[in-house]
Structure formats: C-alpha cells, structure tokens
Length: 262
Image 1 (cartoon, rainbow, N blue to C red):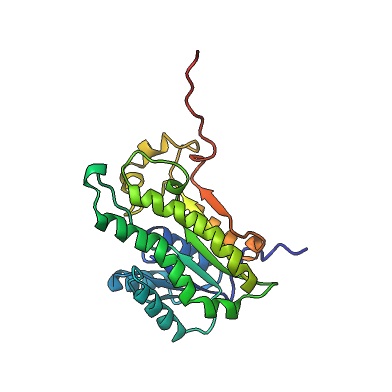
Image 2 (image 1 turned 45 degrees about the horizontal axis):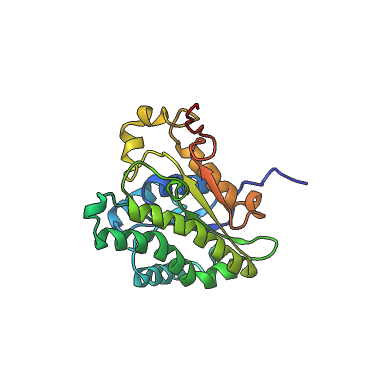
C-alpha cells in the first residue's frame, strides 16, 4: 500500500462553476496546488479572468452563465474546444433568495431552483461524454455537487427556494450517483456550513458572532473547503459514491438540542 500520493491530482483536469470567488475559488486553488489543471466558469467574464490570472497558468477562464440549459450546453461546447476528457466536475454555481413568506415571488423561486438544481443536472448531462472518456474502474471521473447544510437543517431566514433546492440537490446527488457509477463516474456532494463569501455575508462580516453558534467555535476557512474537495476528487475518495460530506464545524451533526425539564 502506497499512500504518498493519495491526495495528488497531477495530470487531472477539473471544471468548476462559480469558480471566480467564494467556495469555488477555494476549491480551484486547492486543486491547482495538488497538480490539477482547472477551468473556472462564472457569468461575470471579468471576474473569471481576474481569478484565473491570480491563480496562475494552470487556471483557465471559461466565462458562461449556466442558469439555463442552453448555457450549460454552451459551457460544455467551450470546454470541448480545449479538452477531450474531464476528470473532475464541480457544480458550485448557486443563488439564494430571502424574502418573507407573504412576499416570496415566482422569480425568487425559479431563479434559485433553476441554478441550484436544474443546472447541475443538465451541465453534468452535457459533459457526460467527456466524463465517460476519463473514467475507468481503477480511476473514476468525479462529479462533486456543492449543496449546503441548509439542505439538512433549517436556518433562521426565510429562504424557501434555497432550502428546497439544496435538499433536492442532496437527493439528486444520490440518484445521479446510482446511474453514473455504471460509467465509472462517481457523484458526491459537499454541504458547507459558514464560510465567508459574498453569498454568506453573515460569516464574512460577522464571523466572530456566527462562530459562537458553531460547535468548533469558528467559521470555515479556505483549507477546510479545499481539503474536503481534494479528498473527494483524488484517489483517496475513489470509494465514496453518492455521499454528502458535511463541512460545518459540527453545526448539523454535533450540536446539542435544547431540553425542557419536567
């Protein structure tokens, strides 16, 4: 048994949606540090190009809006102009919407459900051929969906479509895994907790206060997210299929509930 290269990604090619910032950028940097070539995509071309320049020559920008099926197909076509195989796909692009129940709109529902649930499915479908070209029994291709602890437990905010979308994606991960494992493609997900980002402004702007409610007493940092993604993407995670790894400092699975004495 040789464990010296369990977490290396040398020679592997990855595509990360929402890769220009936040969790996507954390994962991109981690993959590159382990030897991968990483394509990052986001709908804002300038941000995508800026991050690619920052992360170095092994990071290539492929700007695209994947909120529609047409956008997913367009990104797959762009990728095919550069590579004929894809080892790792990270479906990270996402959106949230928080509005009181009485005011929650169809736009807020559809925007979130389309990007958070529909797009991961149809982008994976559009990239199925290049994922199959990479995968083998001894070295499967990987699809990692970025879900959320909000798909596992409630938060205090009225983010109806976000909660529903992340719960759906966790279960969609299992269903996709059951089918795609037959093509030597492993599908898994990561459910992040509090990580500082533009989407999680509470963790970004009020990290110390947020940390008080987390068993680990801190918000997540780049290495926490990169580490989980590297594990799933590398040889170390080859026997993990359909699973959601919760990376949240214990909030979901190690929080003590309140009790009322009789």
